[in-house]
Amino acid sequence: MPLISLHDRAALAARFRTDPALHLFELGDLDDTTWYTASAEHGPVALLYSGGDTPVLLAFARPAAVPPLEALLGDLLPFLPRRFLAGLPDGAERALAPDYAVERRTPLLRMLLTHDLSTEVPHEAQLLTPDDLADTRALLPTSYPEAWFDPRMLTGGGYTGVREDGRLLAVAGVHVHSPTQRVAVLGNVTTHPDARGRGLARACVTALCRHLAATTDHLGLNVRTDNAPAIRLYERLGFTTVATYNELVLSAS
Image (cartoon, rainbow, N blue to C red; front, side, top):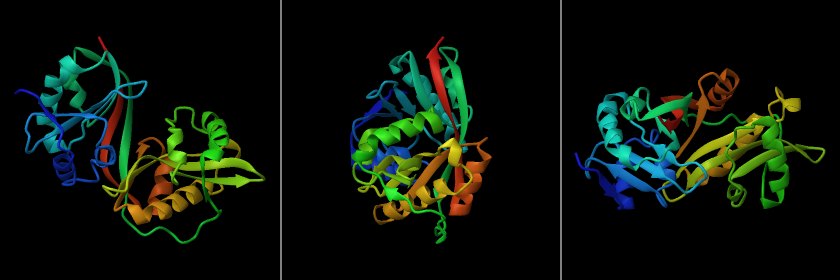
């Protein structure tokens, strides 16, 4: 079927809001992207974003919708860059073979805040500002080397942190946040190796969730399936697993 390029942001938002937990990233970043589908009214949608250093393809779907998603990905082959990062449900990358090989696969859980946050916080976390940029950049390579960090998120309360004796030891931030669509995705939750096991990350996430509560109805995060300590932390805070998918690095064969 011929590809359809979608431009009506209101129509896209309405489609994604049928399953907001699955489509948090799409709702959080409706602008500055190219959207493709095989049907203007229903079915899967693929987002292709080329604004960063590495192009990104996002195409989420529930298991029952994976076959039509595979068909859409096959139609997209001529438009894909030679190397890109993709977020896809299990098995969907088969539609891109043999043209693309998987360099790296990271299975992830999508978790959504579904319960009230605990009132007990072991440490006090503060909202970070652009004045904290140097300290944030110093912390992430040590505690979370693979983190994707956008300094703009330090403006407007997109990050919280815990300091001790002036030293930034833990942070939690957002990957996307749309007050208009009332969604947010947390990211870069990390603690310096010297300070782990003391509840600093919990304090950062709790403070950030409370800060975002006024502008979000759907607040989620992604976590690696093999990161058992983080999963336990998020479950204790009130997050529930709502979907699974793979983060893939794909390159032309």
